[in-house]
Structures are given as structure tokens and as C-alpha cells.
Image 1: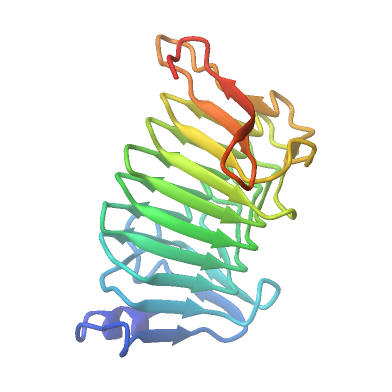
Image 2: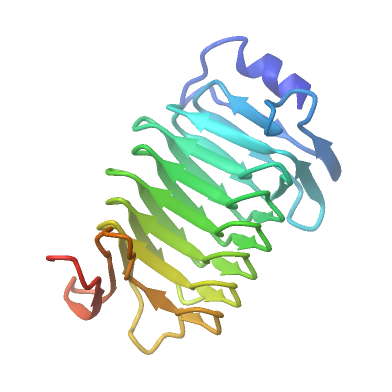
Length: 242
């Protein structure tokens, strides 16, 4: 991980000349090179961190990406008892997360804010002390493909303050969270690109789908969307005016 910091600061990488950090089997510590939350600051674009698989390569610590593009995390377990494992922020941020398990984090598993864009595919966000995936802020966008969010201390998935989340893939599964499965508030939107009969969110302690924020905060919307773009089911907050 120390070498990753050195190489990421050495020069500017491009789409045709990217930086790929290959992590072997075992446990890799970020504490030495990270901030006080044990997160490594990703300081360049066009960088990939790739491990040997969710059962082989574990990162102790997290990553913070601020206004960097084409950052990728693949085939890793990421765990950070201090804070969020993946903290993604800024309107220029574009991140892909592939086949990773983000677990046992001190707050949310993945926190996306301030206009950042993320695509996660075949990932698990589980057993975190906060929410599995928390998205907040105007122009913040997340596309979750065949992802699972389960056994988190709060919600499985939150879209808040105009953030937009799109769920795709029949293997999508949000369950066994200790508060709500899916929560949309403050005009946040969750678009479920699956048939209404798909068991997307189930078995959560609170509501499987919640859009009532309370405390004077407007609600959000949760919608199942057909292939032609029409809505087959929409849940809208009481105080909203969609």
C-alpha cells in the first residue's frame, strides 16, 4: 500500500497509460499510509486496485476518492472499523467497484456525496455499523448492478438530498438490515429497473421501502421502472410534490 501511494504521486496517468496496483492474497494494512480514519487518499485518476478475490485479498482500512476519474476497485474485501470504507466525493469523481465485499465498517460501507458517480457490480455491502450504501447530494449518482446490502446496523440503501440511485440485475438483494431496506428522503430517488414482483427488498426490521423522512424533511421516491421507461410502481413521500 505504501508503494501505491508513491506510484500514484509519481506522474499523471491516462486512459492509455493507467496505473494498476495488484494485491496478492492476504491482509494489506492502510493504517501506515492512511489518514486518521485509516483511509488512503487516492491522489490520481486512471488507477485500479485489484486483488485475488473476495475470499483471498483483504484491505484493513478504506479509500477516499476526491475529484478523481476512472478509479477502480476489483476483487477485494475492504473493512475499516474507524469509518466508511469507501468515501467518494466531488463532481469529477467517477469510480467502479467490481466483485468486492465492503464489510464491518465503522459507519457506512460506501458513502457517495457532492456529485460523485459510482458503479458497483456484484458487490456486497454488509455488517456495517451504519448504512450499506449512503448516497447524498445533488448530481450524486450510483448504479448498483446485482449488488447485495444486508445485515447493516441501519439501512441497506439510502438516497438523500436529490441523490439518484439505479438498481439493476435480478441478483439484487436488500435484506436483514436493522432499520429500513431502502430509504429515499429529501427528494432522493431510487429507481428499480426490475419487475414489481422481484423480491428486491425484504426481511428488514423496519420498512422494506421507506420514503417518509420526518423532522420537516421532504420525502423521496422509490419506483419500479419498465424496460420502456414507464413506471409500474411509485412510492412518494407524504410531504413531497413530485
